[in-house]
Length: 187
Image 1 (tube, rainbow, N blue to C red):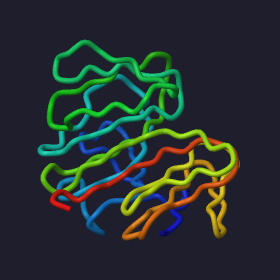
Image 2 (cartoon, rainbow, N blue to C red; image 1 turned 30 degrees about the vertical axis):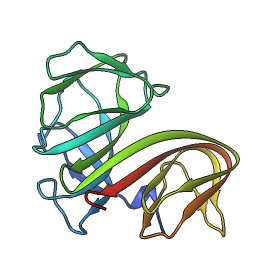
Image 3 (cartoon, one colour; image 1 turned 90 degrees about the vertical axis):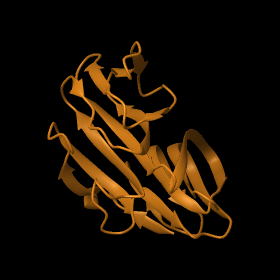
Image 4 (tube, one colour; image 1 turned 30 degrees about the horizontal axis):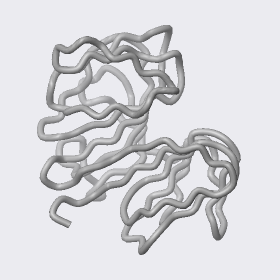
């Protein structure tokens, strides 16, 4: 288990050049946007436009801040995502474009390469203690006063990278988190 601080995330341009992303974590270490097995990041979307295409990748998008965005995926009618919406999973290799509802948004992205990893993203309210069974994954602090069992405070947008952990992670306090389970295919 390792705490990753929001101020230390690696910043890089989007694959399509339309903005900037803050990479929270990726696997394998040193992977690029073209060869990751999994990747967790956040980005500010400041204008309408297409999403980058990632062949062979599945993606889940969660809006963290802002009024929201209308996301059209694979020529289907748009789905409006707000900070209260559940995470939305979709293939990252089909056409997807966003229209902002009322100004810029900050979003949270999880992407996994098909055949290597799969993922699940869920939002949780923490009021006391939240225990999550997790072997591989990321816990991302959305809001509130949170700490890890056995020490370590989590600030806004800090994360905990869980890698080969034996049983569970416990978050204490009051606030909200996103939990990302990363499962290696074939396990």
